[in-house]
Image (cartoon, rainbow, N blue to C red; front, top):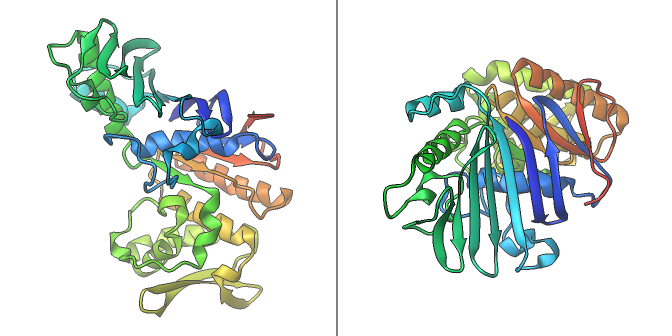
Length: 360
């Protein structure tokens, strides 16, 4: 679970920190207040977790060019993202396997870069104690703290112990930091999902996708494979109960039934039944097309996952928003999920944590 996120010089955000809790969290604010920027900054780090560089066109988020995330497109600015995670049973088990006996507390990981210089700085904290600070500065790859030490690799790796490859035997705190990075990277596997505002456009696109190769737990990047995933769930018997859950969740939008099928080779179409009549899913209202990926993801996500939903209120009025957030909140409680959503409309769900933004 993400306890806190701090973001600097990322898209609309100059500097901001926000705390999250388990269950439903609502990032509330007017247009251009930085809601999407914060959620995308978190997702960029999580998408790149374990890779040897920031992945800007990945399975969760499509950015296309790293300059697009720089505030004011200033290549000399320092972009920074810091994430604080709680240590749960899964992360703790990996820590124990690496010889670090910590059952609770937190791990903080930060990644910052200056695009024009190629500089990168990273920090790893365990229970609010700094284990190591390191990076590439002025063409030198170094550990800065706890003591200066040369690195034998350019430390561009994101949340990965390989970034701490030293040229000599490191101090114990660096060895612990490597174990922490490994445990965090492995412990978060298949437990983070992002659904962005772009999900509305993907109902009319054609994807040459082998349904059997879709991920078990995700609707895909920005929900672009939702129709394909829905088709898979409708045809594989083991998903039968989950399909019932999807239909139950969609009833709050007066949807009676949903199906999907091929209308031509490599052309998959979704269909929806409402008021006793069937129609093409692409022609459904914004609310239906916006919410279906969310319900599918809530159903598919393993227990203990974090799900980020940008623009949960797309196509909804206040009453529909409250109905949907009620469904989301129930899933969060029954499956021990952390759900972080952004909204321009203020919800009236009593058990939601409201995080209000006024300006970026």
